[in-house]
Image 1 (cartoon, helix red, strand yellow):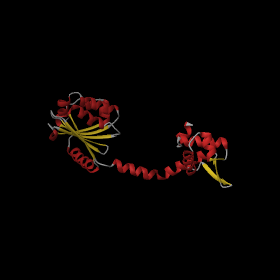
Image 2: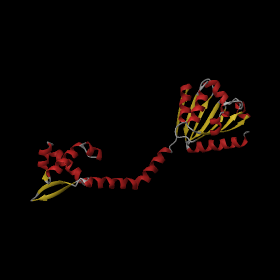
Image 3: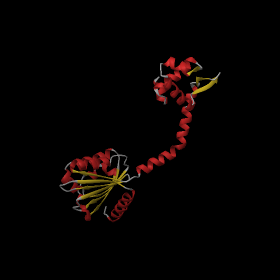
Image 4: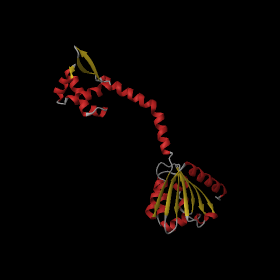
Length: 240
């Protein structure tokens, strides 16, 4: 029965449990005959079913007899399992968080690599911090910075950016949707900068705007906090 295997029983365990429900209290030999299973297989699976609490054993005249537990007990067992999992859920989540905190660096090259770097930003990001030169990026990546910016606004990702002064004439941030989601300041010190920095979701991505494009995605708490601090300093000193 598929429902019993979904519950967590193996195929043989399901066969034996159903046979016991139909036959009542019987010996292991009788179960083996009904199911067509080998005696060793029958005994092994009966032991597993008893450990799970859904088959009981009674000795009558030195003969071991087995009986299936009431089907409603399956529901109670499921509820008990759920309660047990709920109790350890905080610990499991803690383990997951510890794994997610592990550092890692990914390296990419070429325009396809740049697309991989920029696409990573779209995953579970609420706010993006950016500093660099969009003009320099457009010179190398042609239309992709525009596509990225439009997709960001479509996804509702908020942006705070310190752009190069040479980006001030850029019409994109004057568009209503981009203007609503973006806070932008400008710094002449970033003019001609050939590497852009994205700070988001516990990560920092670096992407060059040179002919030989290279990109890094760094997942590290210390580097993330450092770059966030650097951005805040740039933001405070930039012009509106």
